[in-house]
Length: 134
Image 1 (cartoon, rainbow, N blue to C red):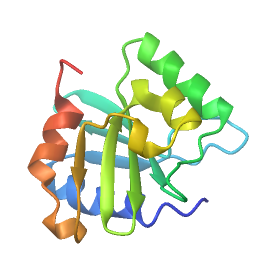
Image 2 (image 1 turned 180 degrees about the horizontal axis):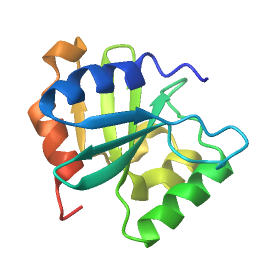
Image 3 (image 1 turned 90 degrees about the vertical axis):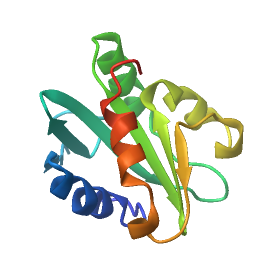
Image 4 (image 1 turned 30 degrees about the vertical axis):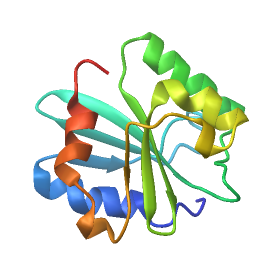
């Protein structure tokens, strides 16, 4: 498992008490490129790929780009959460190809939070995850 600066654990820790059902996804040899977590709340199912920002970039494999774009084409909800130290950015899955090719500073994000995860605005994060217009 890649180091994501604890994002998968953090998201689970803060979203489950907010009523999300969470499932870690380990797909080695089963479904190449699938995000590492699946969530569901009020009948809305979504996927989150957790990444760490290293040298201003995130590493996204071609299989991940393919999986995310295919799921979005079928109406699925996919997000990428990327963290560097205390900074966390949430991206819509449609940014996956840009994130693969460019520094994170050049890619538009849905929201950005800093400080300890307990200080992040989880109400806003939840609103992005459940927003039917995204």
